[in-house]
Image 1 (cartoon, rainbow, N blue to C red):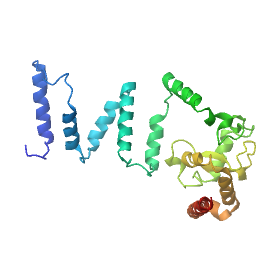
Image 2 (cartoon, one colour):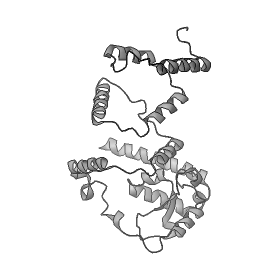
Image 3 (cartoon, helix red, strand yellow):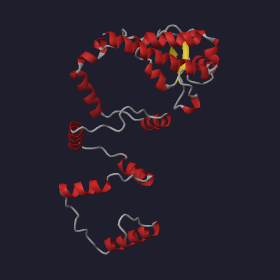
Image 4 (cartoon, rainbow, N blue to C red):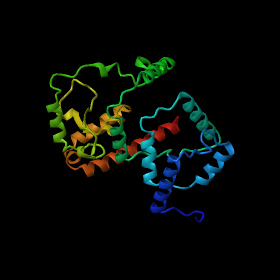
Length: 262
């Protein structure tokens, strides 16, 4: 075979059949049970560098890793390898990039129904003990425990569906349709008051946009209040999207001015 060439599917199938016959007749691979030396691994790594994997190969790798749980030794070894890479100047190619809506949808679907095992729960509990200044009332985003307060009686599925219908089943921030989301749109309280369920205080958001409203609450409150107060922004989502982008740019510019002043 010519160096750098590839086997045809027919040749691959022929080789697979030959190896099956050899193993069926008692053939034992002489390298079975042996570990590759560091030099051999380095050469293999260099030989594969820059070669993109086919989608079929990626799917096969993904399928082979499903349900597998890495040992604690393997995790520590991987962590040590990453630390050495970053210490030597490695830059993550994903740094600064964001997942697409399709990728986010796949991630959400893959995690549906999953629950942390006892070991994971134990580690989360241990982490909370190690950083007590980041939990409960000591967390910098603590809002007095309002997440534990009950919703009023009028907060029903039918009522929330009416708000989504009013908003055209579209996220009022990014414009994505509910049919393109995983699950229903969230109904967000503009003033962050659970007891205030007046329609003008409620707005439909996708999961991604709703998660952004946890921080900078005064800023989001003013933005959503302006959207709800303007019949033009409420009616035209393209105009609203342009307005939101302009609003965000002005906010970033103002933050930079504040930081420069500090």
